[in-house]
Image (cartoon, rainbow, N blue to C red; front, side, top):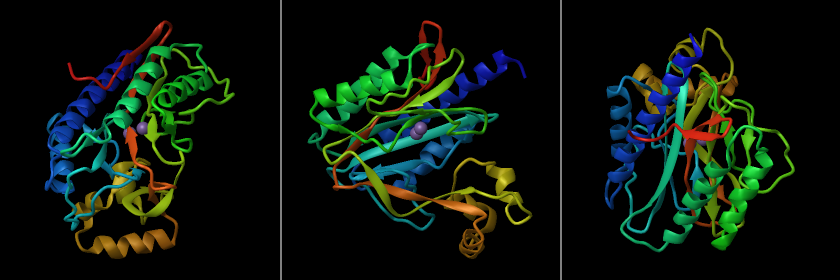
Length: 292
Ligand code: MN
Ligand code: MN
């Protein structure tokens, strides 16, 4: 595999994940079921010849991240909901990760959503080889504060590598003294989270999202399907049907799979998020998660 192939795979994955995100976001309306959005997004990614890099995340109001509906969920959007849709596609393991926020039928939280988009834009304009991750965090925090909101400090952007969604480097959403410098050729996801609450999230129940923690004969089929990437209960259901639930509890008890927890703002604050995946260059960056 040449570096050109790697780059082309990232570009394809980025384009497909943006198209899927927009298809999903445009379909979010009052009364529409979460499952319908998931199905539309998944359909576009599969139809485009890519794979899901993680379950379609739908995080509503004070839920910041990590939730996808289960097979039998009949959850539907309500007027006034602030919905973070977070979508990832991969091509041969090279991942595009992106997110946006939509408000259902009202505009009460337009400023919160604008703050997330503006913070992301300012961060992207700052990215180039040699810039520290602390500097990116500072730019994000400054922009969010201009709107009078708080960044969420315990949610971060991240580097991406083949089949690795969080590949080691974290991109903070607030000012830190982290002097780690970005390098040319790195692929990073930048994702400011903005809240009118305290600025932290905490675990709150199951998300219907898991990942393989230990490769064994018991998890071989799951590992072959998803590697170490997060997978949805609903994807497991396609493999095992009603056996899924027994299998899940068996594998969790033995710590062969790890559950992700739903992340909610500690003070119940409203949360908005915006995210792009970018390719770092010597003089800036290329946004990979764009439609053509
Ligand atoms: Mn994401
Ligand atoms: Mn991400």
